[in-house]
Length: 438
Image 1: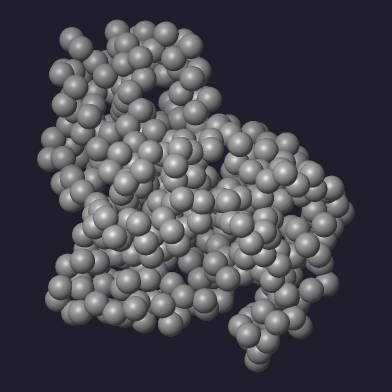
Image 2: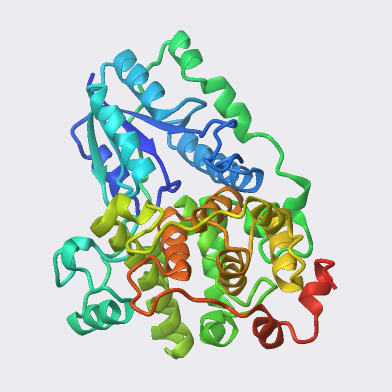
Protein backbone atom coordinates (compact mmCIF):
# COMPACT_ATOMS: atom_id res chain seq x y z
CA UNK A 1 0.00 0.00 0.00
CA UNK A 2 1.31 3.43 -0.99
CA UNK A 3 -0.44 6.32 0.78
CA UNK A 4 -0.20 10.03 0.10
CA UNK A 5 -1.46 12.66 2.56
CA UNK A 6 -3.46 15.54 1.14
CA UNK A 7 -3.54 18.55 3.47
CA UNK A 8 -6.40 20.97 2.80
CA UNK A 9 -5.49 24.57 3.62
CA UNK A 10 -7.19 27.60 2.00
CA UNK A 11 -8.58 25.40 -0.79
CA UNK A 12 -11.72 23.84 0.69
CA UNK A 13 -13.25 22.60 -2.55
CA UNK A 14 -13.17 19.76 -5.07
CA UNK A 15 -13.70 21.73 -8.30
CA UNK A 16 -10.58 23.16 -9.97
CA UNK A 17 -8.20 21.62 -7.45
CA UNK A 18 -4.72 21.28 -9.00
CA UNK A 19 -3.12 20.27 -5.70
CA UNK A 20 -5.65 17.48 -5.13
CA UNK A 21 -5.22 16.42 -8.75
CA UNK A 22 -1.46 16.16 -8.12
CA UNK A 23 -2.10 13.88 -5.15
CA UNK A 24 -4.55 11.69 -7.06
CA UNK A 25 -2.11 11.25 -9.96
CA UNK A 26 1.00 10.78 -7.79
CA UNK A 27 1.02 7.00 -8.17
CA UNK A 28 -0.34 6.42 -4.68
CA UNK A 29 -2.91 3.73 -4.07
CA UNK A 30 -4.49 5.38 -1.01
CA UNK A 31 -5.31 8.96 -0.03
CA UNK A 32 -5.57 10.35 3.48
CA UNK A 33 -7.31 13.75 3.31
CA UNK A 34 -6.66 15.98 6.30
CA UNK A 35 -7.41 19.48 7.54
CA UNK A 36 -5.93 20.97 10.72
CA UNK A 37 -8.01 23.47 12.66
CA UNK A 38 -6.32 26.43 14.37
CA UNK A 39 -6.23 26.25 18.15
CA UNK A 40 -9.11 28.09 19.79
CA UNK A 41 -6.73 29.79 22.21
CA UNK A 42 -4.18 30.97 19.62
CA UNK A 43 -3.69 34.70 19.99
CA UNK A 44 -2.05 37.50 18.02
CA UNK A 45 0.84 39.58 19.39
CA UNK A 46 -1.83 42.17 20.20
CA UNK A 47 -3.60 39.90 22.68
CA UNK A 48 -6.79 38.81 20.90
CA UNK A 49 -7.80 35.61 19.11
CA UNK A 50 -6.09 35.04 15.75
CA UNK A 51 -9.29 33.47 14.41
CA UNK A 52 -12.46 35.02 15.77
CA UNK A 53 -15.92 33.40 16.00
CA UNK A 54 -17.27 34.67 12.68
CA UNK A 55 -14.33 33.45 10.65
CA UNK A 56 -14.22 30.16 12.54
CA UNK A 57 -17.93 29.54 11.97
CA UNK A 58 -17.79 30.34 8.25
CA UNK A 59 -14.81 28.00 7.78
CA UNK A 60 -16.66 25.29 9.72
CA UNK A 61 -19.53 25.54 7.24
CA UNK A 62 -17.06 25.14 4.36
CA UNK A 63 -15.65 22.05 6.05
CA UNK A 64 -19.09 20.53 6.60
CA UNK A 65 -19.79 20.88 2.91
CA UNK A 66 -16.42 19.44 1.94
CA UNK A 67 -16.84 16.55 4.36
CA UNK A 68 -20.20 15.66 2.82
CA UNK A 69 -18.76 15.74 -0.70
CA UNK A 70 -15.75 13.64 0.18
CA UNK A 71 -17.75 11.10 2.16
CA UNK A 72 -20.01 10.66 -0.88
CA UNK A 73 -16.87 9.82 -2.89
CA UNK A 74 -15.72 7.28 -0.32
CA UNK A 75 -12.91 9.29 1.29
CA UNK A 76 -14.12 11.11 4.41
CA UNK A 77 -12.17 14.19 5.44
CA UNK A 78 -10.15 13.80 8.63
CA UNK A 79 -10.57 17.00 10.68
CA UNK A 80 -7.82 17.38 13.27
CA UNK A 81 -7.79 19.70 16.27
CA UNK A 82 -4.00 19.83 16.27
CA UNK A 83 -1.31 21.86 14.49
CA UNK A 84 -0.11 20.38 11.18
CA UNK A 85 3.40 19.99 12.59
CA UNK A 86 1.93 17.68 15.24
CA UNK A 87 -0.85 15.90 13.36
CA UNK A 88 0.64 15.21 9.93
CA UNK A 89 3.88 13.47 11.00
CA UNK A 90 1.91 11.22 13.37
CA UNK A 91 -0.61 10.35 10.67
CA UNK A 92 2.11 9.76 8.09
CA UNK A 93 3.96 7.38 10.40
CA UNK A 94 0.74 5.52 11.23
CA UNK A 95 -0.14 4.86 7.59
CA UNK A 96 3.38 4.50 6.21
CA UNK A 97 3.28 7.70 4.15
CA UNK A 98 6.28 9.90 3.39
CA UNK A 99 4.70 12.58 1.18
CA UNK A 100 2.27 15.41 1.89
CA UNK A 101 0.67 17.32 -0.98
CA UNK A 102 -0.87 20.72 -0.26
CA UNK A 103 -1.54 24.19 -1.58
CA UNK A 104 1.44 26.54 -1.61
CA UNK A 105 0.81 29.74 0.38
CA UNK A 106 3.54 32.40 0.11
CA UNK A 107 3.12 34.02 3.54
CA UNK A 108 5.46 33.64 6.54
CA UNK A 109 3.11 31.82 8.94
CA UNK A 110 2.02 29.36 6.27
CA UNK A 111 5.55 28.87 4.95
CA UNK A 112 6.70 28.07 8.50
CA UNK A 113 4.05 25.36 8.71
CA UNK A 114 5.51 23.65 5.63
CA UNK A 115 9.08 24.09 6.90
CA UNK A 116 8.13 22.34 10.14
CA UNK A 117 6.82 19.33 8.20
CA UNK A 118 10.02 19.10 6.19
CA UNK A 119 12.05 19.38 9.38
CA UNK A 120 10.06 16.40 10.70
CA UNK A 121 11.26 14.36 7.73
CA UNK A 122 8.25 14.55 5.44
CA UNK A 123 8.44 15.29 1.74
CA UNK A 124 6.08 18.18 1.00
CA UNK A 125 4.88 18.92 -2.49
CA UNK A 126 3.37 22.41 -2.31
CA UNK A 127 1.34 23.29 -5.41
CA UNK A 128 0.73 26.92 -6.36
CA UNK A 129 -2.95 27.28 -7.28
CA UNK A 130 -4.64 30.27 -5.65
CA UNK A 131 -3.95 32.88 -8.33
CA UNK A 132 -5.98 33.34 -11.46
CA UNK A 133 -2.86 33.50 -13.64
CA UNK A 134 0.14 31.20 -13.09
CA UNK A 135 3.28 33.10 -12.01
CA UNK A 136 5.37 31.12 -14.50
CA UNK A 137 3.44 32.67 -17.38
CA UNK A 138 4.10 36.26 -16.35
CA UNK A 139 6.20 38.27 -18.86
CA UNK A 140 8.86 38.88 -16.18
CA UNK A 141 10.57 36.96 -13.36
CA UNK A 142 8.86 37.17 -9.98
CA UNK A 143 11.60 39.43 -8.61
CA UNK A 144 10.93 41.94 -11.41
CA UNK A 145 7.21 42.40 -10.76
CA UNK A 146 6.16 45.98 -11.66
CA UNK A 147 6.06 48.16 -8.59
CA UNK A 148 2.57 49.53 -9.28
CA UNK A 149 -0.60 47.65 -10.18
CA UNK A 150 -1.44 49.69 -13.29
CA UNK A 151 1.83 48.75 -14.99
CA UNK A 152 1.27 45.11 -14.00
CA UNK A 153 -2.26 45.08 -15.41
CA UNK A 154 -1.28 46.77 -18.66
CA UNK A 155 1.59 44.35 -19.28
CA UNK A 156 -0.59 41.33 -18.52
CA UNK A 157 -3.30 42.53 -20.89
CA UNK A 158 -0.79 43.46 -23.60
CA UNK A 159 0.77 39.99 -23.38
CA UNK A 160 -2.67 38.39 -23.71
CA UNK A 161 -2.18 36.12 -20.70
CA UNK A 162 -5.33 34.21 -19.81
CA UNK A 163 -6.08 31.65 -17.08
CA UNK A 164 -6.04 27.92 -17.57
CA UNK A 165 -9.44 26.27 -17.84
CA UNK A 166 -10.69 25.12 -14.44
CA UNK A 167 -10.25 21.44 -13.67
CA UNK A 168 -13.45 19.39 -13.32
CA UNK A 169 -14.57 17.99 -9.98
CA UNK A 170 -13.19 14.46 -9.56
CA UNK A 171 -15.76 11.71 -9.86
CA UNK A 172 -13.76 9.34 -7.69
CA UNK A 173 -11.09 9.52 -5.03
CA UNK A 174 -8.50 7.00 -3.91
CA UNK A 175 -9.58 4.89 -0.93
CA UNK A 176 -8.44 6.00 2.53
CA UNK A 177 -6.02 3.94 4.61
CA UNK A 178 -6.94 2.63 8.04
CA UNK A 179 -5.77 4.91 10.83
CA UNK A 180 -5.40 3.40 14.33
CA UNK A 181 -7.88 4.72 16.88
CA UNK A 182 -5.14 5.85 19.25
CA UNK A 183 -3.60 7.99 16.50
CA UNK A 184 -6.96 9.55 15.68
CA UNK A 185 -7.33 10.42 19.34
CA UNK A 186 -3.82 11.88 19.46
CA UNK A 187 -4.49 14.27 16.57
CA UNK A 188 -7.83 15.41 17.99
CA UNK A 189 -9.99 13.91 15.24
CA UNK A 190 -13.08 13.59 17.42
CA UNK A 191 -12.70 17.10 18.79
CA UNK A 192 -12.09 18.53 15.31
CA UNK A 193 -15.17 16.90 13.84
CA UNK A 194 -17.29 18.10 16.77
CA UNK A 195 -15.99 21.66 16.43
CA UNK A 196 -17.22 21.95 12.86
CA UNK A 197 -20.74 20.92 13.95
CA UNK A 198 -21.13 23.74 16.45
CA UNK A 199 -23.94 26.16 15.55
CA UNK A 200 -22.99 29.50 14.02
CA UNK A 201 -23.28 32.58 16.24
CA UNK A 202 -26.76 34.10 16.37
CA UNK A 203 -25.33 37.21 14.70
CA UNK A 204 -24.61 35.19 11.56
CA UNK A 205 -28.18 35.85 10.43
CA UNK A 206 -28.24 39.55 11.42
CA UNK A 207 -30.66 41.20 8.99
CA UNK A 208 -28.39 44.25 8.81
CA UNK A 209 -25.48 42.21 7.49
CA UNK A 210 -24.36 42.55 3.88
CA UNK A 211 -23.23 38.91 4.06
CA UNK A 212 -25.38 36.94 6.56
CA UNK A 213 -23.24 33.82 6.50
CA UNK A 214 -25.72 31.89 8.65
CA UNK A 215 -28.31 31.98 5.86
CA UNK A 216 -28.48 29.21 3.20
CA UNK A 217 -27.53 31.63 0.41
CA UNK A 218 -24.31 32.59 2.23
CA UNK A 219 -23.39 29.19 3.63
CA UNK A 220 -19.67 28.52 3.52
CA UNK A 221 -19.89 25.34 1.43
CA UNK A 222 -18.62 24.85 -2.10
CA UNK A 223 -22.18 24.08 -3.21
CA UNK A 224 -23.38 27.45 -1.91
CA UNK A 225 -20.41 29.19 -3.53
CA UNK A 226 -21.17 27.74 -6.96
CA UNK A 227 -24.89 28.46 -6.55
CA UNK A 228 -24.09 32.07 -5.67
CA UNK A 229 -21.87 32.47 -8.72
CA UNK A 230 -24.63 31.02 -10.93
CA UNK A 231 -27.36 33.30 -9.56
CA UNK A 232 -25.12 36.38 -9.71
CA UNK A 233 -24.57 35.78 -13.42
CA UNK A 234 -28.18 34.74 -14.10
CA UNK A 235 -29.40 38.06 -12.68
CA UNK A 236 -26.91 39.90 -14.93
CA UNK A 237 -25.35 41.66 -11.94
CA UNK A 238 -21.88 41.82 -13.53
CA UNK A 239 -23.18 44.55 -15.84
CA UNK A 240 -23.82 46.86 -12.87
CA UNK A 241 -20.82 45.89 -10.73
CA UNK A 242 -18.64 48.93 -11.45
CA UNK A 243 -21.48 51.36 -10.77
CA UNK A 244 -22.44 49.81 -7.42
CA UNK A 245 -19.18 48.44 -6.02
CA UNK A 246 -18.62 51.31 -3.55
CA UNK A 247 -21.89 50.70 -1.72
CA UNK A 248 -21.85 50.39 2.06
CA UNK A 249 -24.62 47.92 2.73
CA UNK A 250 -26.75 45.31 1.00
CA UNK A 251 -26.15 42.01 -0.76
CA UNK A 252 -26.00 42.93 -4.44
CA UNK A 253 -23.82 46.07 -4.49
CA UNK A 254 -20.72 43.87 -4.80
CA UNK A 255 -20.08 40.37 -6.07
CA UNK A 256 -19.66 38.78 -2.59
CA UNK A 257 -17.27 36.25 -4.11
CA UNK A 258 -14.60 37.11 -1.53
CA UNK A 259 -15.73 34.93 1.43
CA UNK A 260 -15.69 31.78 -0.68
CA UNK A 261 -12.48 32.79 -2.44
CA UNK A 262 -10.87 33.25 0.98
CA UNK A 263 -11.60 29.71 2.17
CA UNK A 264 -10.96 28.31 -1.28
CA UNK A 265 -14.54 27.02 -1.60
CA UNK A 266 -14.62 28.91 -4.92
CA UNK A 267 -11.88 29.05 -7.55
CA UNK A 268 -10.97 32.32 -9.25
CA UNK A 269 -10.46 30.38 -12.48
CA UNK A 270 -14.04 29.11 -12.24
CA UNK A 271 -15.29 32.67 -11.80
CA UNK A 272 -13.31 33.81 -14.83
CA UNK A 273 -14.51 30.95 -17.03
CA UNK A 274 -18.15 31.55 -16.12
CA UNK A 275 -17.73 35.31 -16.54
CA UNK A 276 -16.35 34.86 -20.07
CA UNK A 277 -19.36 32.66 -20.90
CA UNK A 278 -21.61 35.40 -19.50
CA UNK A 279 -19.90 38.01 -21.71
CA UNK A 280 -20.31 35.79 -24.75
CA UNK A 281 -24.03 35.34 -24.08
CA UNK A 282 -24.97 38.78 -22.70
CA UNK A 283 -22.21 41.15 -23.76
CA UNK A 284 -19.24 42.75 -22.03
CA UNK A 285 -19.20 46.21 -20.46
CA UNK A 286 -17.31 48.22 -17.82
CA UNK A 287 -18.89 46.12 -15.08
CA UNK A 288 -17.72 42.78 -16.41
CA UNK A 289 -14.27 44.24 -17.09
CA UNK A 290 -14.08 45.53 -13.53
CA UNK A 291 -14.60 42.03 -12.13
CA UNK A 292 -11.55 40.92 -14.15
CA UNK A 293 -9.78 44.03 -12.86
CA UNK A 294 -10.48 43.04 -9.24
CA UNK A 295 -9.31 39.47 -9.84
CA UNK A 296 -6.07 40.90 -11.24
CA UNK A 297 -5.63 42.99 -8.07
CA UNK A 298 -5.99 39.76 -6.10
CA UNK A 299 -3.27 38.15 -8.23
CA UNK A 300 -1.00 41.16 -7.84
CA UNK A 301 -1.10 40.84 -4.05
CA UNK A 302 -0.11 37.19 -4.37
CA UNK A 303 2.79 37.99 -6.66
CA UNK A 304 3.98 40.68 -4.22
CA UNK A 305 4.26 37.93 -1.62
CA UNK A 306 6.29 35.77 -3.98
CA UNK A 307 8.56 38.74 -4.59
CA UNK A 308 8.99 40.14 -1.07
CA UNK A 309 7.83 37.43 1.34
CA UNK A 310 8.43 38.18 5.01
CA UNK A 311 9.53 41.76 4.28
CA UNK A 312 5.84 42.63 3.85
CA UNK A 313 5.32 41.79 7.52
CA UNK A 314 7.98 44.08 8.97
CA UNK A 315 6.85 47.11 10.96
CA UNK A 316 8.25 49.37 8.24
CA UNK A 317 7.01 47.13 5.44
CA UNK A 318 8.92 47.91 2.25
CA UNK A 319 9.50 51.53 3.23
CA UNK A 320 12.30 53.33 5.03
CA UNK A 321 9.77 54.90 7.43
CA UNK A 322 10.30 54.36 11.15
CA UNK A 323 7.86 52.00 12.89
CA UNK A 324 4.58 53.53 14.01
CA UNK A 325 3.94 54.27 17.64
CA UNK A 326 0.97 52.32 18.94
CA UNK A 327 -1.96 54.01 20.64
CA UNK A 328 -3.29 51.02 22.60
CA UNK A 329 -6.28 52.88 24.05
CA UNK A 330 -7.21 54.33 20.67
CA UNK A 331 -6.92 50.88 19.10
CA UNK A 332 -9.27 49.42 21.71
CA UNK A 333 -11.84 52.16 21.06
CA UNK A 334 -11.49 51.52 17.33
CA UNK A 335 -12.13 47.79 17.73
CA UNK A 336 -15.20 48.49 19.84
CA UNK A 337 -16.64 51.21 17.59
CA UNK A 338 -16.22 53.94 20.25
CA UNK A 339 -13.90 56.45 18.56
CA UNK A 340 -16.46 59.24 18.39
CA UNK A 341 -16.32 59.37 14.59
CA UNK A 342 -19.83 58.15 13.58
CA UNK A 343 -18.99 56.55 10.22
CA UNK A 344 -15.94 54.75 11.60
CA UNK A 345 -17.84 53.57 14.66
CA UNK A 346 -20.73 52.28 12.56
CA UNK A 347 -18.33 50.32 10.38
CA UNK A 348 -16.45 48.79 13.30
CA UNK A 349 -19.72 47.78 14.94
CA UNK A 350 -20.81 46.11 11.73
CA UNK A 351 -17.51 44.23 11.51
CA UNK A 352 -17.73 43.01 15.10
CA UNK A 353 -21.39 42.02 14.78
CA UNK A 354 -21.28 40.32 11.37
CA UNK A 355 -17.71 39.53 10.31
CA UNK A 356 -18.12 41.55 7.13
CA UNK A 357 -17.50 45.10 5.93
CA UNK A 358 -17.64 46.80 2.54
CA UNK A 359 -14.38 47.51 0.76
CA UNK A 360 -14.95 51.25 0.96
CA UNK A 361 -15.38 51.15 4.71
CA UNK A 362 -12.35 48.88 5.18
CA UNK A 363 -10.27 51.65 3.63
CA UNK A 364 -11.92 54.35 5.74
CA UNK A 365 -11.45 52.58 9.07
CA UNK A 366 -7.87 51.52 8.25
CA UNK A 367 -6.98 55.11 7.40
CA UNK A 368 -8.61 56.37 10.60
CA UNK A 369 -6.66 53.93 12.78
CA UNK A 370 -3.34 54.88 11.20
CA UNK A 371 -3.66 58.63 10.63
CA UNK A 372 -6.23 59.82 13.16
CA UNK A 373 -5.59 57.46 16.07
CA UNK A 374 -1.87 57.08 15.34
CA UNK A 375 -1.84 53.34 15.92
CA UNK A 376 0.32 50.57 14.48
CA UNK A 377 -1.05 49.39 11.14
CA UNK A 378 -0.11 45.81 12.01
CA UNK A 379 -2.60 45.79 14.89
CA UNK A 380 -5.36 46.75 12.46
CA UNK A 381 -4.29 44.06 10.00
CA UNK A 382 -4.38 41.49 12.80
CA UNK A 383 -7.87 42.64 13.87
CA UNK A 384 -9.15 42.18 10.31
CA UNK A 385 -7.52 38.73 10.24
CA UNK A 386 -9.40 37.81 13.39
CA UNK A 387 -12.78 39.23 12.40
CA UNK A 388 -13.37 38.99 8.65
CA UNK A 389 -15.13 35.96 7.19
CA UNK A 390 -13.35 36.78 3.91
CA UNK A 391 -9.89 37.20 5.42
CA UNK A 392 -7.25 36.55 2.76
CA UNK A 393 -3.64 36.70 3.95
CA UNK A 394 -2.37 38.26 0.71
CA UNK A 395 -5.04 40.91 0.20
CA UNK A 396 -5.25 41.86 3.86
CA UNK A 397 -1.53 42.47 4.26
CA UNK A 398 -1.10 44.29 0.97
CA UNK A 399 -4.11 46.56 1.48
CA UNK A 400 -2.95 47.62 4.95
CA UNK A 401 0.53 48.32 3.58
CA UNK A 402 -1.05 50.40 0.82
CA UNK A 403 -3.07 52.56 3.24
CA UNK A 404 -0.07 52.92 5.56
CA UNK A 405 2.26 53.96 2.74
CA UNK A 406 4.60 51.06 3.41
CA UNK A 407 4.07 49.03 0.26
CA UNK A 408 5.16 49.54 -3.33
CA UNK A 409 2.95 52.53 -4.21
CA UNK A 410 5.27 55.52 -4.82
CA UNK A 411 2.54 57.99 -3.79
CA UNK A 412 2.92 57.06 -0.12
CA UNK A 413 0.03 56.50 2.29
CA UNK A 414 -3.66 57.08 1.66
CA UNK A 415 -5.64 59.06 4.20
CA UNK A 416 -9.41 58.99 3.79
CA UNK A 417 -11.12 62.05 5.26
CA UNK A 418 -14.01 60.60 7.29
CA UNK A 419 -16.11 63.75 6.89
CA UNK A 420 -15.82 63.66 3.10
CA UNK A 421 -16.40 59.89 3.03
CA UNK A 422 -19.56 60.40 5.08
CA UNK A 423 -20.80 63.08 2.69
CA UNK A 424 -20.00 60.96 -0.37
CA UNK A 425 -21.32 57.60 0.82
CA UNK A 426 -23.78 58.15 3.69
CA UNK A 427 -25.17 61.63 3.16
CA UNK A 428 -28.63 60.62 4.38
CA UNK A 429 -27.25 58.95 7.50
CA UNK A 430 -28.99 55.63 6.84
CA UNK A 431 -25.90 53.53 7.41
CA UNK A 432 -24.90 55.32 10.62
CA UNK A 433 -28.45 55.07 11.96
CA UNK A 434 -28.51 51.35 11.18
CA UNK A 435 -25.57 50.85 13.52
CA UNK A 436 -26.67 53.36 16.14
CA UNK A 437 -23.97 56.01 15.83
CA UNK A 438 -26.27 58.96 15.11
